[in-house]
Length: 350
Image 1: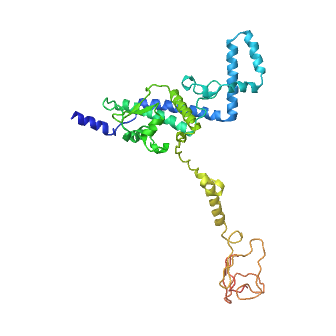
Image 2: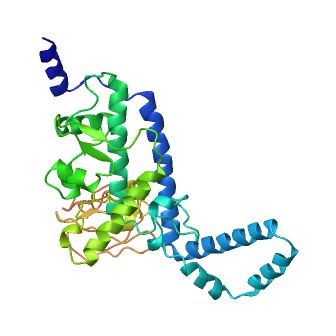
Image 3: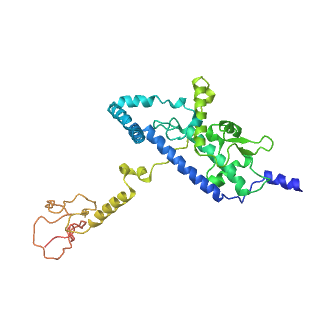
């Protein structure tokens, strides 16, 4: 019975497992550090910001040297200040980041010249950096939250479930351009491994390791991979699947040159109000209809223009102009005119 229970523990998922407080604190600390590294990387890639950063670095170094040295060195510092900026930049170029041992670096954001250790990171390197830490944190958090000595970790089959439970996102080796999980483990073998007997994931690093170490392992792997590529090894190239860019904002997808929907609605309302104001006589702002002889005429003159009358025919005014007396004559045939407020056409005016 004990063997059967143990087998069930090792093969079934812990459906009710929830991230604990330790995981939340550690992951928040990681997110803060990761965002800082991305900002430093972005500033270094910007030529203007890089120049300003290097100038500030030189000024800080000179100030620190002046505070710690005597009068003899002060004269030396004054001479250094008179050196052209080009000479100072040449001295900075003497620091070759590729020659520095990554594990001897004390500040991953500054190798001495203002250049960060991750200056040459690209999308694939940042992805591997995040994957290293997330899987490392996941295995340690699982052990802490489950608190079962019989089940210190989990198998590859349950990785997707626990990864989604803790990080609220899906996990797939396909995004790394790989077909199987062991191939991914080979890329991050400095951080994660698999137990040969149980098949469980196991961590290489302790749960209190410095976050900078993950940057160092990623940079060390990048250099090794680049050396293989330079030697002609095409298999060393990474072919990760990048996520699709986010869709454009709703305003950009609207017509009219990107106008907002609020602006379009206001324009439509104004147009409808203008149309509604056009009805009625005397103003000439609306439709002016005359039905003479059964036809429709929408081209009547507007307000302020003299109306032309036909010289004859049964559908218009009589040719002899008389003063309006308010009565109607029953003779004639014609239509109805709504432009002047009265009946005309089929009735002779008195």
